[in-house]
Length: 130
Image 1 (tube, rainbow, N blue to C red):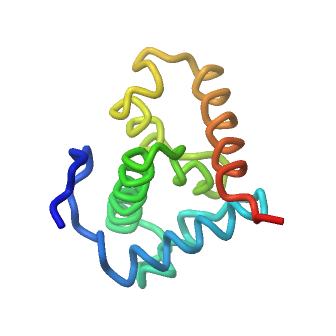
Image 2 (image 1 turned 180 degrees about the vertical axis):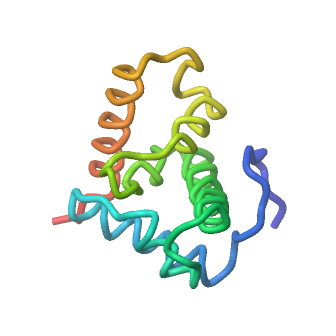
């Protein structure tokens, strides 16, 4: 079946085991109104826990997932992925710019507010049904 929605992020992991495992981990974190770390996601992907290769690959996969979520009219699921600081990396905000969800010149406070709002939207989207 051909894709009908153009993608912002090129496919590298879509359809792979790693994509599905990371996607599941992000949903699990969202359902518990929590977060998961880039290091935990790297372990799921079989990558080292640090370094530029890890950051690039985890970032790319998170970009694909968020791209797919936006195409389905859902918030950026990657909002629940954070660094050891407990906050998202610059790649998250770069994607938000690319998706037109955040202004490129957004202040640090505006970026933080956007991230918190996006997390809340993710939590609402993925809350367990009762």
